[in-house]
Each structure stands twice: as C-alpha cells, then as structure tokens.
Amino acid sequence: MVKASTIKAHGPWVLIKVDPHPETSKGGIYLPQGNMEEVKGHSTGEVLSVGPGYFNKSLKGSAPKEKFCPLDLRVGDRVMFRGYLHDVNKYHQDIEGLEHSLVHCDNIEGVLEK
Image (cartoon, rainbow, N blue to C red; front, side, top):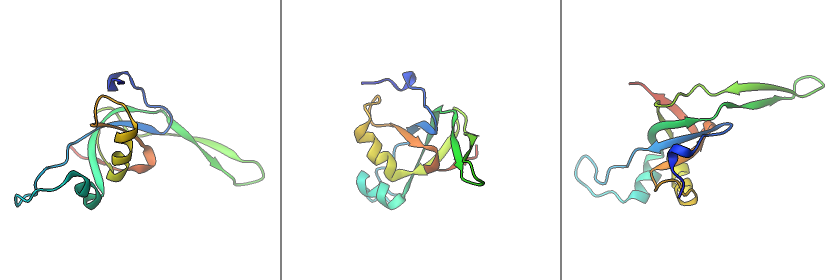
C-alpha cells in the first residue's frame, strides 16, 4: 500500500483527500454509498498535492505552438470535483485506503471558499 504523503502529483493531476459522503439524508433516510455518488454527481475534498501543470498545444498558424498552463490550486484548498471519477479511482489506486484519489485538473469543478 502506498502512503499518500509519499505521492507528488505530476503534470495536470491533483491528489485529493476525499470527504466521506453522509450515510443518511437530512431527514434520516439511509443512503447507500453507490447511489449517493451517482445522485450527487460530485465530491468534495482537500488538496494534498498539485502537479505543476500541462502544455496546451495550439494549432494556430503553420506550426503548432505549445503554451505551459500552470495549475492555480494550492495544497490545503478545498475543491469540488466530479464524484463518479473518485468511484473509479478508489478501486484502481492502492493509496492508503479509499479516501484518497488522483483527479485530473479538468475534472475539478471549483475551489470552495473558506
């Protein structure tokens, strides 16, 4: 098993410690975990590691041009991302249990304000 503290995200990838989903609704109804992620459509969590960014290839003009796009996320940021991706990642990543996930920067929907 790989410890999350030893992982440094690379390129456009972000390592996130995912917040657990509630087991019951506000009204007290039991919510199965699989259904909750499908209905909710997104998850939230804390950024543990951020990759430096990626090269965006532009085909304007005769020769392709590459522009480096840094990621504007910081360690400690709270983010919202597409939840179904975490469901896929948690079964393919052997990272310190199921609460960590590697997410591509394109799948992060936003940063939550403090």
